[in-house]
Every structure is written in C-alpha cells, then in structure tokens.
Image (cartoon, rainbow, N blue to C red; front, side, top):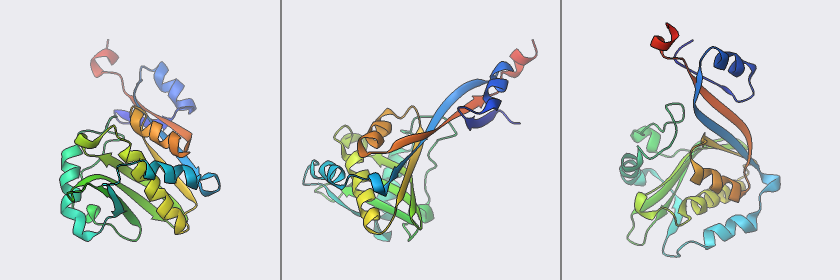
Length: 200
C-alpha cells in the first residue's frame, strides 16, 4: 500500500486506516468557480486595486528565463507535504503553450514579481500554481493576478475554473474565496504508522 495514501476526507477507508494507526499528515482541497457565478466587476476591482506601476500580461517564451529564476527563488515556499509539493519547472514546463497558459505581474523595472500557470482543456481550466516574489507578498498581487487570468480565460470561452492545493496555504484559500471559488473537495494524506511502533 505504501507509506502514504491519499483519500477524500469522507472516504470510508480513512476511518479504517486510522483505526490501524495511520495518521493524517497533510490536507488538501479543490475548489471551483463557474462562469455563471463569475462576478466580472469584483474580479476587475481586485485588478484595479493594485499599484498601477505593475503590469499584468500573458507570459511567453521570451519570459522563460525570468520564470525559471522566480521558480527557483520560491521553490521551498509552498506549504504542505510531498502530496502538494510544487515541482520546479524545466524550460519545457516553463514555456507557455495553447493548453498551458501563463500570466505574470511585472514591476516598473520590468522584473517578474508574480506568475500563475493554468492548464486549459476546452471550456475547463485548472490552476497549476500561483506564486509571488517574497519581497512583494502581502499586497494582494497574487489575488489580482489570478483574477486577471480568470477574466482573460473567461473572455476566451472557459466556463469552469478549478484550483486546489495544500489546506495549510491560508493565503491562497482566502484569495480563492475572495474571487468566488467554492471549495468542493477535501483530501487527506494518511501516513503509515512507524514500523517500530507497529511491531511493539
């Protein structure tokens, strides 16, 4: 079965495993925003509230070096366990495509201070990750960038927006709720009892 098992929070297997000594080592969530409930005015307000010196735009192949630098800088900043750990990108993963879309926030000096990557499949989009440079956190940039990305994709016909991650990531959960995402999934990672304990 392995040392870690991931199940939905209400899965009957969870109770059985916990009786056997398995313990919850991490929690994660999933949330959805449907186009029918999308408040364009609200999302636009989040974007407009940001320092006008910041520029939001799609990322392209010419941005990959900046993307990789920010990815390296923030690689250890994602809360949670191995289940929700962000994998550092290589050049292929960092290069946006028609189905792997990316948006960035740029400071007045042209430096990339935030980015979000989204996987698009027809009318469905799922956020891979959103991250902000450590020196620019706490200013609403991540929320505004995610709002900007949702609005851009909505204009292109995307109807369902999904996101998720570690339940310990309080900042992103608050941002999602503010943008109108509704949490509809909760997962738990169960870790097997220590082999020493199991043998006593």
